[in-house]
Length: 181
Image 1 (cartoon, one colour):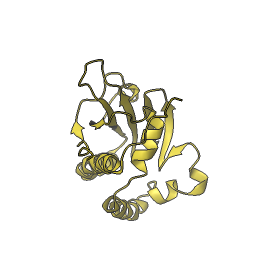
Image 2 (spheres, helix red, strand yellow):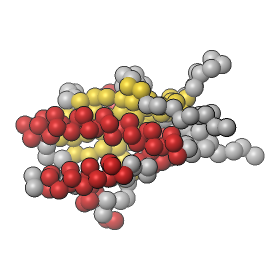
Image 3 (cartoon, helix red, strand yellow):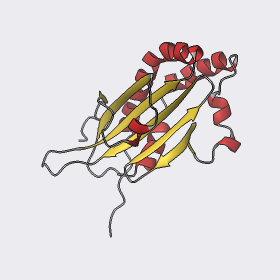
């Protein structure tokens, strides 16, 4: 019998994350951690691709509404970022800015705000009951009143969406680490 998938928990931005250094000032910063079962891959890019390939249906519907509304303001839409010519160097709709052995940083810049998201792999410590975690963090820097207004409207949805992605990925079963032969 398999164990119940872990639930995401709100945590501080990881101290080791490069995301902490992206902006001098942030208008939103949050992070959610989820326990990874033993044997899960430690590759942050693989984990990021896995998380963002498990979009809940309600999130897809919410993104369609968002795209319809923001297109009128001349902002980037998920539809345009998913186009074939936009896919190189992306994870889902997010441009990849930086990768390391423990973290991938992605995001997008637009006229109202810039944001970055990090998928950070936190290895288990040497303690017997220690567990590895995936930490999904977001920082946002607004440029103007449109950005601050937009952020005020979407922040509660953003938090629900991030947690939903993590729950759905956990339920699907995390990608396994390669087996050594």
